[in-house]
Image (tube, rainbow, N blue to C red; front, side):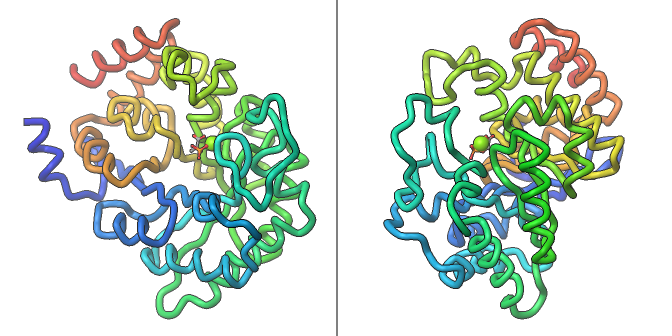
Length: 315
Ligand code: PEP
Ligand code: MG
């Protein structure tokens, strides 16, 4: 019965009590975007630009980058497309921005730190994004740009300034606990936030996201992670600015209910997960999501958090 509900679900996502929830796709390139476009995805919530450069030996020019980005925009005319600037380093080594050997690459010069460290790298990428938008024929996409691995207010301010100089909406990912803890202050600097639960969990639990034997720790149901997410979502509601989730957590139908109950406004996931999440959201009322969030936040283990959330959405 559940499988049939998922198969017949068409979107857009709506809670049983009527509230809309924006479901978006995570994509790596134009081909993935064209594949996601005919699904119920209302746009792109995470375009991982570095995945197009994993084998590039030299940096593509702004013009070459623009052509790649435009493919993704053209798959979603008139729709929201959130482009993430280069998240190179650590688990995503990009040859042309290879950094010197690091003992702890996950804690090293990666993400926006690397974009800032290389002269003009961020500027050229933002130029490529602006060029893609400007060259779009017909209906233009709504382009939002965000930086990965932001840790300080100064970084957020610098990123927002360079991004807005090109008339682009500027946001940051919440992947480092320092940002979740000061979410209200960060929100004064940017237009939106997107929580990357994969890295936020890794850095909160001090557990390598690639280590299979640490799966009990790299679990977004860990109550400490849920508290950081809730704090960020609440800051977004208070500021009246969008706060989404684009990590794996968004693709877990039950956790999606909890996230919506916390005040998260959009969920971005692999295209294949959208109908399962959409079908689940259609079964629950907003009040149940809020109860599930409160119950999960009162739990002290990942297992009980999941269990109490399940009870709230099935009663
Ligand atoms: C995340 O960290 O949750 C995220 C969405 O980014 P990535 O998985 O690309 O690091
Ligand atoms: Mg990440």
